[in-house]
Image (cartoon, rainbow, N blue to C red; front, top):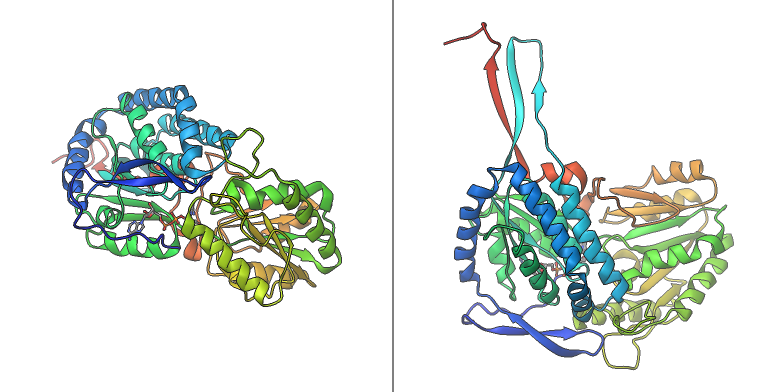
Length: 471
Ligand code: NAD
């Protein structure tokens, strides 16, 4: 889903762009609209900073631990600003800040180690790990801080430096985070740049960048990979998803309904690994639809800064239009909105949480990524039919299976073609696990040691055993 962005290649230094509060639809602040040409100096500084930063792992660990403390100490400023520009409830913004600090701590203490290679010959060869250089990170607007930290924590821990570009819809909390981190990190190690396109395109294709790590939509991911091909920089892409949840015959509907609902509607459905389609056995279909609709109708909708809000607005106008379009297309061909189905008659980008029943399976709300508060629920007659439908997508991020017999649920989960399969929940991740989509959901692996190695290159030292090959 490429974000429509005007081209401003001719803009001059010092220009700014407006940032809108999605709860009101009104601009409330501005951010610098940096020109692509400014990246040359920024990347040069990142190169310069790399010399010192890569040299001392112990100093890096201390700096990253201090950075984690600084993030935690700034939570009271970061979380409300994040909610203001992104829309999510304040408690979720606070959780995002906490996760950012936790990720810094996790990677600060992760040691890539060394790996001796033994193959019977009288040589001693060893794999050591080296940093890559300046890394470019480009992130979307749904989890600005959490996704930024998923980029910079492993990249910096590995000894790289980084130039990071947030989405123009959510630049402010990331800029504030950058100044908080600047107190703990040497100059040039992490630079935040903000601006409209073609800033991201120029960053992805900059010849001084050695790794481009991108999170966003599939079409933009393709463009980023093409841009990075110019310098043959390494590419990591975390792209979209269309995760299915399969409910089994023995599922206890009322017991799982809250969890299933929030796995689809958390952050207003704007989660790459949200449940985006539900498949329920035909016998349980009316009960599942009703349980989800009941929750959709009773959820507290409002501005994220209002106490009590459970569901905020959609983040931006183009995204709201997309959610509206997908819903209207489904309703036009016979789907029923059992809850919601329309935007709310109030300022801001609010859409009523929507449960769609009787949706033809070829509707875009089923086959594509809606990325909003709309959930299609589809009946199935045989389990094979459900698994086939779940896998019948170009995406392959996650999926889940819900039922009482855990072994049976696990056997079904094993048949899902995706990177992560959950049982009786959906979307939980540990910092220590790999996170990787298959098919169009991504290239490369984030998370855990895999995320660290994704920011390193192997360097092999190969020498004879003592006494076997002196010159
Ligand atoms: P997007 O692709 O429109 O934008 C993502 C980022 O790329 C933004 O910073 C944007 O400014 C920048 N960008 C736009 N055009 C560019 C170009 N030509 N070259 C370089 N950068 C460019 O995505 P979005 O609408 O901001 O975010 C929603 C998408 O992100 C959804 O598809 C969602 O599934 C995906 N996402 C994936 C994950 C994951 O981990 N797999 C996580 C969160 C979001």
